[in-house]
Image (cartoon, rainbow, N blue to C red; front, side, top):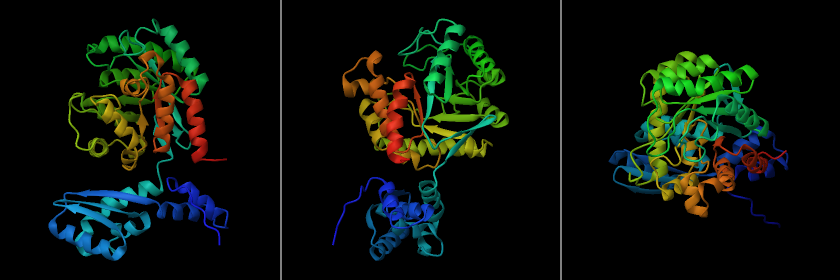
Length: 383
C-alpha cells in the first residue's frame, strides 16, 4: 500500500491525480473543486435558521461555529453544496440557497473573459494593465511624462513589454492631491488616448471619476472606465458606462486610513458586492464589471496585507478582480524599500494575488511583473 499527500491548497493537484487515472477533463475538475475545503460566513440569520443549520451540520459532517445572528460553516464544498438546493436543504434554510448557489457557481466556473467596449479580454492568462499617468503630482511618477508625445511613446513601450490594457489617468489619487478641473483633466488625457488609438496601441482605459472626462475619453478611443470611487462620485458615470457598453473597473474606498475594520476582507467584499449590484441594477452588464479592492486607499499597511492574503474572499463574489499594488506604501512597510524601489515587491505581490484568484494587475513596471506572473500562472495552468 502506498500513501501520497497531495497539495491541499489547489484543486489542480486532485484534478491531475484523477486525470492520470483515466478521468476526463471536466469531471476531474468539478470533482477536484468539490472536495476542496470551503469556509462560509453566514450573517443576519434568525434563531430558527441557526438551530436548523446546527442540526443539519451534525448529520452532514460539516463543522459549524455559531453565535447570535451568525454562523461559520466549514467543510468540503461537496458537503456544503446541498444547502444551495431547495430539494436537499432543510426548509428552514431555504433563504440561504440563492446566495450560496451564486457563491458555489462562481467558485466552480470563474469568469473567463471580460467584455470591454468593442472587444473582449481573455482572463485565462494574466491581464497586466500598464499605468500611464499624465499628471504632475502622482505619488511615484508625477511629472515623469511631460508631454502627450512622451506619454504615447511610453504607452507603446508598456504594450511592447507585455501589458494588455493601458490605463491613462489625468488626476492624481494620492492622499492630499488637489482636485483637477474637468477641462484640464480632459486636456491631459484625450490627446494621449487619441494618439495611442491612432497608432493602434491599446485597448485603453481612462482612470477618472467624472462622466464628462470619461465621455471625451471614450470618444477618443478608450474602451474601459476605471473609477476609483466605484461610480459614487459622479452619478452620470453609470449611465454613460451602460450606454457606451464600456468595461468598468469599480474600486473600493471607504473613509480614511484611520477607518476601523473588524474583518477587512469580509467588509470590503460586502461593500464591493453592493457596488456591483447597484451598477447591474442601473443596466451595466455583469460581464463588463471588474472589481478592485482598493489596495492603499484609506487602508493601513496591516489591513492591506490582510486583504492581499484573503483576496479569495473578493474573488468569491464572482466578478473578475483587479489589483493595484504597484509601489504602494504597504509594500514599503513590508520590505523597507522606498517608493522608487518597490517594483520587485510589486511583482511578488501580483504573483501572490494571482494564486488567490486575481486576474488583472495594474502596474508601472510591466516587464518585471510579466515575468513574475508568467511563473505564477504556469504553476496553476501548466502546459
